[in-house]
Length: 188
Image (cartoon, rainbow, N blue to C red):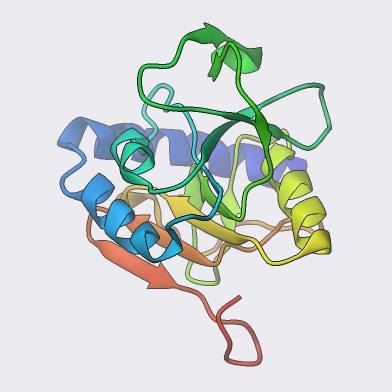
């Protein structure tokens, strides 16, 4: 499975880079609109790196606390530090920018970066397992909405998965929103 996921990641990086070069369209506005029904809830976003689609405008528009992920240790769940537009940032693990100070938050809604996603609601990440561990832990304590944010071109036929992969509840792209339903027909 490791080799299969590595090959899928290489292809996905290329696909995402082409989509990034083409522009982000209305993606952040669509994301902000989708998230607007969750005002007041703790939202986690991310600081975009390389060719990741940019969630910052949607994060800034959120009416409620917003955090960004902080990697504390390899093979561990993420923690989320409070973020606001213009807050002081430093470089954290994997060169991700993180706030220098702020409260630790537990998200109820998560904007999740990804390399690829499929129609089943699975995502291909960077391979560290941080988001899967985090989602598993948070979901064990209560409901958490996981929203993938990506370019439409990042959709693939099928993401390789294993027993640790956590499904997304929705994916937002520059072309719209896809909500994934569980086996029982309910939104998961």
